[in-house]
Image (cartoon, rainbow, N blue to C red; front, side, top):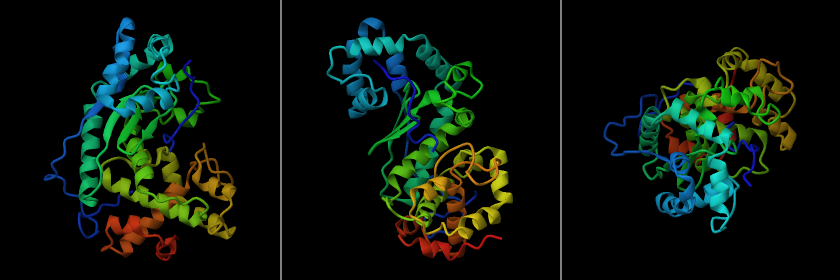
Length: 339
């Protein structure tokens, strides 16, 4: 049987502009980048298959989507092994479940052919190709996960659970259990969050090093690098969407930057390797424990971004390749003096 909603994956998971070669603060030129990107619609392939064609679906989808189709069936839907003879029955039950059919109808109604998102993705990955000439441009595959996963990056595919982005006020969202889907998560389920959430997920997987066991400072800086790069890839996207904050939460951060930093360093937390300390600043939630309820969760993303932005401002010749390769977070810390 298919599992009901349980996982958020990377879903919950600013104006820094760079030049293509030497760092600096100019727009990344993309006019001459020969990249054409499309969004592959696994969600429509599945939900537009007739009930008596479910066995054929797996052969067709395997040809169209390669090994990602196995990942979708076994890891994302958590349905049945791809070779299980019962899989067509499981898929048929999923596709014709009134809840999931209604959800897919909402996806088709709200997102349509996803041309707006396709254009944003294409420009973002053009900028990434300019900043990192050897970078891999992923296949982007849209799927309906039954609210299991919002973003699912692999080595070569950026998977997007499109049902997570149909708008918080859509009636389907109202049916989601509040214990598994608290309001701050539902508030992010809007179409404008799709591209920044997905690109952030790709960067977090492919442009951060393993920092298991490292201190809070390292966590702040590594995440701040990703946010600075995300900002360069999506320069016209509002900052609150990139951070997954509300506009009010972002304004609170900007007004209280010194107080946030004072709280962090005043309790000798910066070099702590304690998981609870790190989680307080890096984990998602409606707000940050110990700070006013106006604060956002995962506030460490914003502090890390502010640290990295200051470092880049102080070192305009540093390229993004050099920034991502930088393994000494104290070099970034030296530039950060919030007031």
